[in-house]
Amino acid sequence: MENWIYASLPTLLKVLISVLVIFTIIVAITRISGLRTFAKMSSFDFASTIAIGSILASVVMNTNQSLLKGGLALAAIVAFQSFFAFVVRKSKKADSLLTNDPIMLMYNGKILYENLEQTNVGETDLIAKLREANALRFSEVKAVILESTGDMSVLHGNEGIELDPDILKGVKGF
Image (tube, rainbow, N blue to C red; front, side):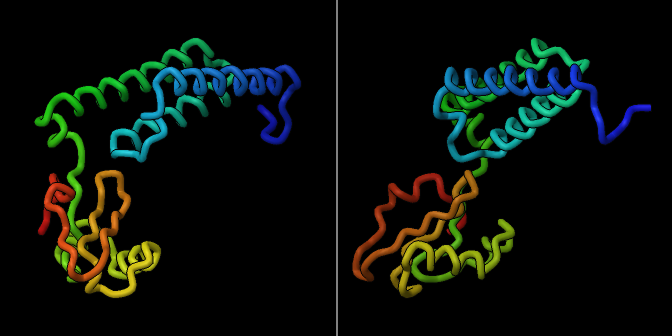
């Protein structure tokens, strides 16, 4: 029976070497794949991140796991993520099918409660975001948009200034 507190020195060294190698592979892959890897996450990016973490943990903690197999799996996930991003960028149909659309949560000073409910965003979260954006009055808020990345964009300004419609391109729910 294996001791859950103690591990032999060769096992510990193998874990340390695995961490060093697999971490180096992750850094190399992210450098090759570019800044897209570090952008705000879409649902697909989130799934890729979970898969990468799972592979990393499997390779590091399972001393019978091959570093080459783990490195190949990491490279395959990042390659698939890059391919997915390319397809979404090139195809409007793939973009609409595979990514979330931004949705309006507040428009012209009015909270859109139906959209809050649809997106599971609480009114207190929305108001906290308004404070974070230094909005002083609801009346100066032109729009609050829940972006496809999960971020909230607060567009506000003087009461007499109209919002450019091009900024709202692709936003649904208003």
